[in-house]
Length: 339
Image (cartoon, rainbow, N blue to C red; front, side, top):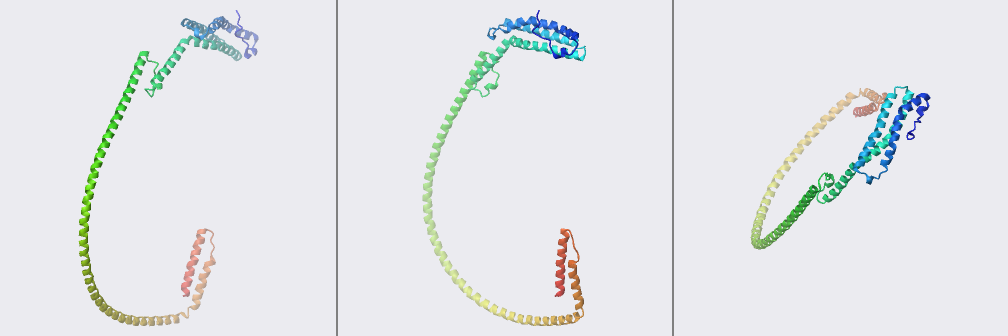
């Protein structure tokens, strides 16, 4: 029995004692032989074209997959048992384990794919059926591609399709009927509007005739009113002219009396003003006499106030502004003293 299918030549085996390496190989040799036994069956089954697969063949794929899987299972058991050795031996064991698992895994996957061949084909058939039915239903249902249509039997789907088609036809017929009714209603409304328009036109002509007659009567009354107002206006002007002349004569009399009173008032005020000025001049003369001894003191006071304007120096802008304002106030005091 050949085991060339799997070679135990991992780098980990090269760094441990030869006898132990051989022992590890011997542990996994039976699994390698099992895998070699299945190789011919595997190649034979995988060579069959997909279109020639039958239900009986899927059973053979399953049987071989389970048999090949035993290699992986037995390898795992041997690995767990052999992992009681030292760490280097453990690495060697894991290396061989991985080789065997890798060799088996691909075969298991390929066999699994063929084992489920009919299930996959059924899924593809259902997907194609779903797409076909969704396309048929799309003209009548907006969400046809979102519905699960493959679950229906053919007669069930045909019944659904017929029902949705009928619903759309009924909807179109209802919309057509509603449109016809709308057109008929608009026509009736248009005819009614025309009748009302003609009636309003007749009423308008009658109203214009009434307005014409009313205008003639109004103009007649307006003429009479203008004549009456003109007569009243002439009488009013005559009356107002008489009242104006009487009022002007009365106002002239009042003005003469008022002018005389104002002349007498001015004479009294002029006399009082002359007396007031005489008193102020006398008071100023007396004050001047009193101030003659204080002149030197006033001069010293003004000098002291001027000195205050330059005596101090401030750094902050706030205090500098304050000092400028104080200097301005000192100037006002000095001006007040000098008056």
